[in-house]
Length: 260
Length: 249
Image 1 (cartoon, chains in turn brown, cyan):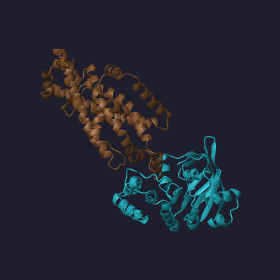
Image 2 (cartoon, rainbow over the protein chains, first blue to last red):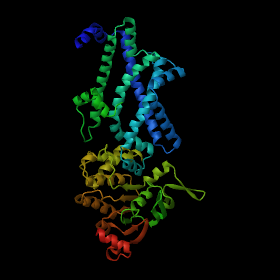
Image 3 (tube, rainbow over the protein chains, first blue to last red):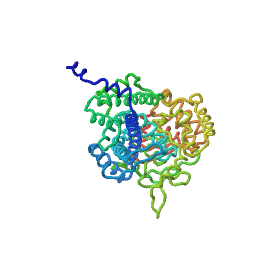
Image 4 (cartoon, one colour):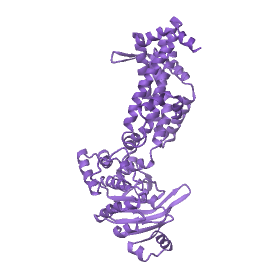
């Protein structure tokens, strides 16, 4: 059985896709990367706004924040992507004359970042909640206003709590971008999909899976080094690089850390 | 500092039932009393960490936390409240140092960010202040690496860096190990002798005897007795005061 499976794999195709990527593929890879990064950054900002809204003294802001999370966590992201793309007309962006973001990608980034913001709100709020109330009181008693105290005192401390789950969110984000092929964004999965439809060789999917694995592994390394630096001045255990790698590849431990 | 008939409720709990107290410049006043008597709540009202339900509190003849509008008191803007707080230093029971900043960074944070002091000048003053509280060699140490007594002394330096007109101490030694209480009290005594205006919620009667001009006894949301430290040691009048003192002395 196993033997047949291995023989059935077209190693030549995989070899070609991994070691001889063509230009079209490079564009697809780049699209996956920039969409993930931009959507994640915007998602964090939205999440921060929503978290601050959630803690606001003004009830309408709290309601908006609550509705936002309920709607975008409670409905399928694929539905959100389709609605976003088809309900609005999105511009094609030309940045600096060299970088073009097609309208579908813009819609995709919008959908992914809004969806991500709903998840980030909970993560950021939990981070802020984990900081002792005395910190805010001490800052206020020194004459700091709310915004300054948040920025200088509370958020830098909350970041240590926020960054590990944020890293997991980004790991998810890179994989979730594959859904954007459904609205015609030419990213990694769309590239594999096109190769398959031309050849009916399913092994293109294995090759593309490999590339996602490369991206998530590189991110794991970056994440580990960020977290190491963050915990430098803090006591408590930190994961070694090896433990981090194992943890990232181990679904059970990922689940235990609260990843989706 | 002048407080007039201050009332405070937490839901149905009436915590302050009309507290009036005047503290003049350069005076040190200790507030004693059993837990739940409202002394911590009262001191937190003085820099508006707690809102008050009625009455008024003034520091340097400025109403704290509120402004008068058509004869009524309405809560002041966040900006004004923050500005008033720069004049009032606060030292907390649990220090509340910023753990992501070194001792020096803790002390210069507010002078630089709130008062807009030049960093070099703030560093110079902070170094002097930390030296005064005996921590000249701990400038670059993070709070996590300091003992409780050292942390509390950094917290005092941090409050003093704002050059406040009034210092509030909320049970500054209650969270400390017995062997380091002395070092914090010594710093506070020096401060009192230098003429800082201080309101200290404490159970340390030794400190009260050494440094306080006046002692105030609170019970069940009211000030029930007031006098010199000697008065409290020698001839407390109120039955509740006698009971309380017999427990802590």
